[in-house]
Amino acid sequence: MSKKVHVFNAGPCLLPQVAIDNAIAALKDFSGTGVSVLSISHRTKEWDAVMDECRALWRELLNIPDTHEVVFLAGGASLQFLYVAMNYLEKKAAYLDTGVWAHKALVEAQGLGEAYAIACSQDKNYSYIPKGFEIPSDLDYLHITTNNTIYGTEIKEDMDCPCPLIADMSSDIMSRPVDVSKYDLIYGGAQKNVGPAGVVFAIIRKESLGRVSRHLPTMLDYRTHIDKLSMFNTPPVFNIFVMNETLKWIKSVGGVAAIQKVNRQKAELLYSEIDRNSLFVGTAAVEDRSLMNVCFVMAPGYEALQDEFMAFAKERGMVGIKGHRSVGGFRASLYNACSVEDVQALVDCMQEFEKLKK
Ligand SMILES: *Cc1c(COP(=O)(O)O)cnc(C)c1O
Image (cartoon, rainbow, N blue to C red; front, side, top):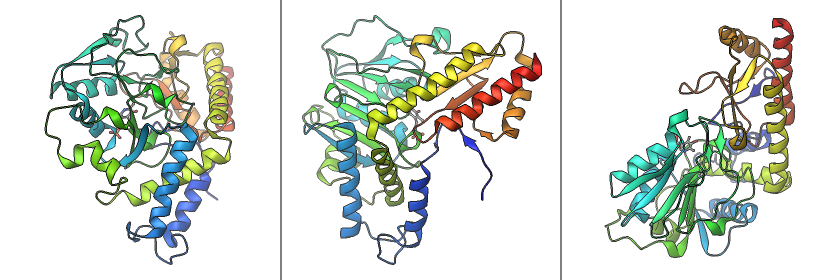
């Protein structure tokens, strides 16, 4: 029996136990072949079946329309920053600068052409989502980061956009239903909510491609991967296997709408404790609070207790609640596989600590 812990890591994330158990079994024997999933050829019918199932689950769980294709790539979400600009930037693109990742995406595009921040929340350390900005309709695209993993802010609804819309959904994909038809491209690293690190998903409106005049290197052209069903080169086999198992789990618990309900419940539980507990305060603007990454610090006057609470929580099995260095304090990531019980354990811990100190 391993030690009882509650994992709130920001990424790589907690994965459902059944996905891990099935991965362990497949490490020994993949799909009754007698061969480990680490050693199987990706050119076999057993592997094709996993790829097909994984694609089908993406389509089913996110209700992806026929206009869009889903592909699996490598290089992390960070390489997608370049893919986006390569495949879509011709004249001018706008970026909503809501955090470090959003900003990095913008900088990458600026290396290839004209890209600018349409609005930015850096003035308050990215603690809110800018609103009310005008979006020109003649842009190649507007790029948004729907969930700002480091700062705990989230764009929780699919926005209407007069130009093509592209979203980095690394850290809130599959946490809520998404109207895919509103986006030309949705991408992200799997390791925040749908799998292990090392695989990336991209959901692409097929007709949005092929509009740029630059030469696209084969591997950086989304069309290559659509045409070759994500197997132009060797795919990250094991990572896709675990992602598929994670998606099967999402389906088994009722799909993305059911997951969203639990996610709301978990976030509500923790945010209401933060708001109630006199030792802690939240750092994100209330209306923009992320359901995935909950950021909080010690309340004014109690800053000196930070390390003590960290140790207190660790003692009680809390893992991964240290805030990102650019925000400080604490961050609890409540991704899909994190349970209400895990969140309750953290809340209990905060309440106990308050009693001890007051
Ligand atoms: C983690 C993260 C990234 C970077 O992902 P890598 O796979 O490490 O490149 C990009 N965007 C967001 C929103 C993230 O949370």
